[in-house]
Length: 232
Image 1 (spheres, rainbow, N blue to C red):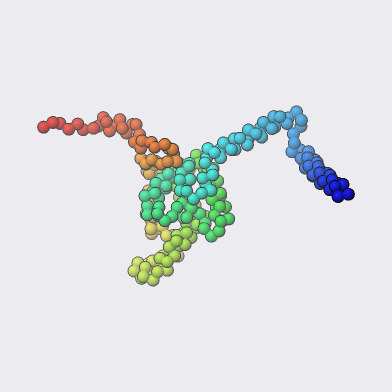
Image 2: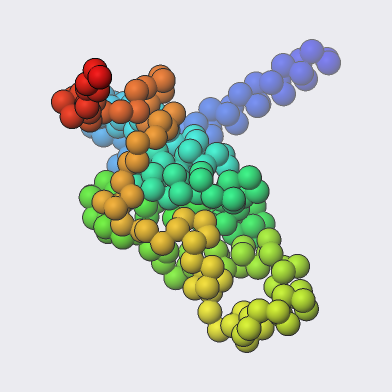
């Protein structure tokens, strides 16, 4: 009796599974989500190609790196190389990374939502080659950066000694952004891509192996203009 009931129960479960699959199949057919039989092979190849292309793009863009806090992830597209180089030579390198300043830090949902939204905008602009010569933060980014400045330097903002010793510091804390006064922090004043450019500096993300930082044309010029000392 026990085995018969058990078998009946298993049979009942299998019937439920089959009914569920049949409903799913009927739903796909009803809304024409499954192509006609003669087109199924072509549709399958097309879907597989689309999925493969998506995986290739994710691998090519090193998309997984954007989930981390590694500053080198920001220079995957080369446009942020001047910002990376200037940050790498600043005092902020020891205490703050890109996400510490440019991404909200109030909760993890806000952090990754902003990263996704900002990253999608950046990648779109880079793909259609519509990037400006001078990269400036947009209004949402300005608000985030300002909030993070205050979050990290809150003790300085409310410091009575600083307020008393710096002329106008108390009045200007609320009517302007921090970098309107602290203009060299951390990227300096030079903003143009052509002015800063890809400086002669080895960056591992762009060249995995240890590469010669001097381009060939510069080596040849140095050889031609080399001054040979004369013997006395």
